[in-house]
Every structure is written in C-alpha cells, then in structure tokens.
Image 1 (cartoon, helix red, strand yellow):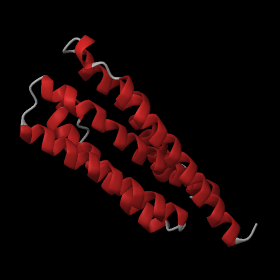
Image 2 (spheres, rainbow, N blue to C red):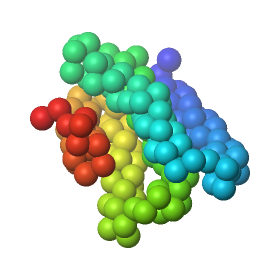
Image 3 (cartoon, rainbow, N blue to C red):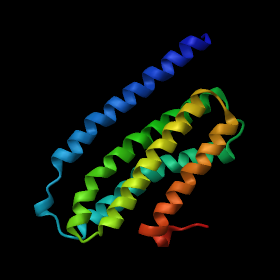
Length: 164
C-alpha cells in the first residue's frame, strides 16, 4: 500500500471514530437525569468513566509508547486511534460539569476542570497527528504532555491518584 493510501485510510478511520463519539455525546447528554440521582452518584459516575474509558486508553498509550518498542507503523496507527478516542472522551466530560455545580463545585473548580478537559483534548489531537506522521520524537513529547495534563488535573481533583 502506498503512503497516500495509508494516510487516506488513517484519516477515514479518525473521521469515523470522531463521528461515533459525536453521536454518543448527544446520547450521554440526552440520557442524563439530574433530578433522580443522589449527590454521590455523579462523582462515582465520573470516577467510573475515567477508570473504564480514559484510563484504559492512557494505559494502552503508556505501555505502547514507553515499553513496547520499536514504534512500528502499526503501533503508530494504534496510538493515533487511541489518541482520537481520548479526544472524544474529553468531549464527553462536559456532561459532568452541571452535576458538579449542583454538588457545590466553585466557579474556580469548574473553570479549572474545563481548562484541563480542553488541554487533554488538544494534547491528544497533537499526539494523534504525531503518530500519523510517524514522528517518534513528537509522539514521546506529546505523550509526556498528556501525562502532565492528567497529573495536573489529579493534583486538584484526585490527589489520591498522584504518582509523582
């Protein structure tokens, strides 16, 4: 397969993944029933979401990038796809903000959460681009930024999960 066909295939794959997440975001926002949940439920829902979805992708990326060398074209494709999943998942995080405001999050907390959510999305987009270009140095660089983004959010909202 020539390089143009590989790039076109990867772009189509990314577009399909983003489209799927866009559809699921509407479903998540439409299916939330704020009035019927206990005040502890949204926090557990976000914790479960982060553990079962975001952390799963993070773990895959960490292992693939740092421990499963060399970064072959197939691994780069997987890194790009996983990064696109994180972009979609970061968009789904907006569904939790209204629930946390009801639980008493300050405006400062909401602002920081939104900044970190956007930062996660942007860094994951850059990581995907670097993987699509097969740029190992940039993949390492952007994964480090992604890791730092996770840690800085945990520092505020989940200090029990800090690992440095």
